[in-house]
Length: 214
Image (cartoon, rainbow, N blue to C red; front, side, top):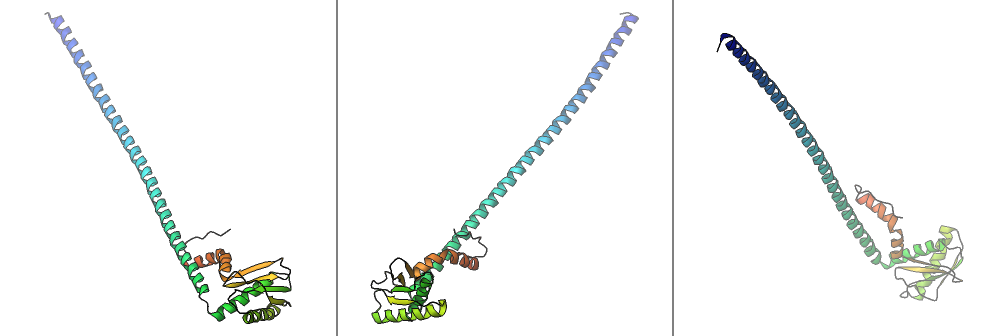
């Protein structure tokens, strides 16, 4: 090999080494960029997964809390309904156990209330069949007196021929038979219970929202 050829060979080798070195450095830079990009992508993916997981966890937490609140509300409503049922049954029992004089006064109040709802000034009062005629006459006489004092009306009240079909109240009929009002304590309680129920619930269970009865 001549000197010129040796020189050419060295130049070729040097040029090859330079190209190899450039390719190596470029490969390292590319590998480094790929590693950096992969790390960035992995970080972004991890953040998305964590964010999604956090959103899902928050959603589940809210769902659980909502479910617990619904169950708690249902339990409160259940306690409220049970309590109101006991109140209703207690009132029923109290009305059923009135003493004779208490029942007599209650019948008189019910009779005045019934007459107040009627335009008639001649009424028949039907009492339970277990009352004697003398007691029935006392009730109608007292009724006329109370109507005059409380309502300012003059009403003729007479015992009806047919007894009332209730034991805890009475029936007031117009003399012509066109109108009839059944007023018993249990029936009055049933009619007034929707309004009384709301008042009782507000007193006993103020933390439970009450819906108005229609």
